[in-house]
Length: 146
Image (cartoon, rainbow, N blue to C red):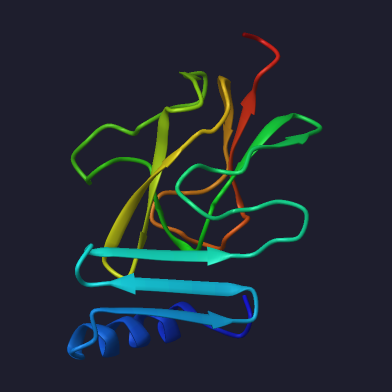
């Protein structure tokens, strides 16, 4: 990830939050970071060859076992909206393009991730609470069965 660690990102966000800046955009290699106090938003993207992973909709990609749903950016993977809530999806659940499948938290900001594809969730590839990188496979969806 361009030599930028999650700790580096957290340190930069802390510097930003302590500053009087309203907005900042940082690009280091294939990593782009956009922070805004006025919109209370954070966007971290990693440019990947042959497909875009920016935004909150995943980047589905055909694989041998179905359609892979990739993390659009670095973050901590959570299967539910909060620790006491049920998971957004389980293996075997039917999802569509707009179904929320998980959330990624980066620098104390949470973003819900949508499937971007329709079908049945055939595999959950990441454990709850794990740090993932942009482009990492989170789920596999069998779109042939719908």
